[in-house]
Length: 82
Image 1: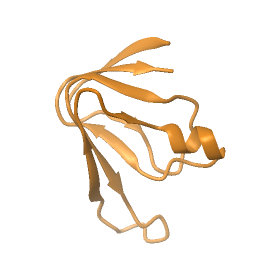
Image 2: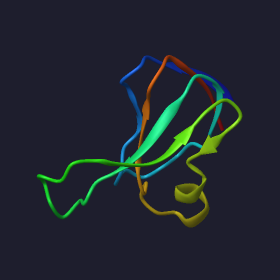
Image 3: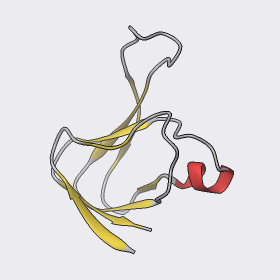
């Protein structure tokens, strides 16, 4: 396990990428956004928000699939990466 920090506006994971970490929010807040990957002009839609104690990234690891959404830091965040 390691700790990572991200500035507000930074993307932690990107929809469509393969995953190699599971994340636990230690500090800060983030949002999950989804795009229609078949439409390059599509705008992201917020589908979830994360605060301290929340986690994300497990689906790509459990199912060996691509990330289903992008996760963006809204504030400065500190994450535990497993």
